[in-house]
Image (cartoon, rainbow, N blue to C red):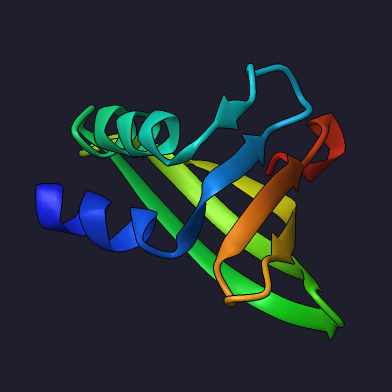
Length: 106
């Protein structure tokens, strides 16, 4: 729902950079990220993420995450990913980098 998109976007700073170095173009700014979340959440793809371990150091955090996604009613892709979060002085997420490779796909 749009309320879900709005709630997620509020976690981020205005000048956020959301980067998936595996190939997607970075989403820069809250408006770009809101559009990305809206398209993703309204695409019919079911996404589930569960952090297995979170490591925090100063204004950064790493989350080792088990994820699955795919269309409703179909077997989802299962991936182990690493999120790298950077936080601004106000505690909002300022940068996200997501890493995985072919060895992470189950």
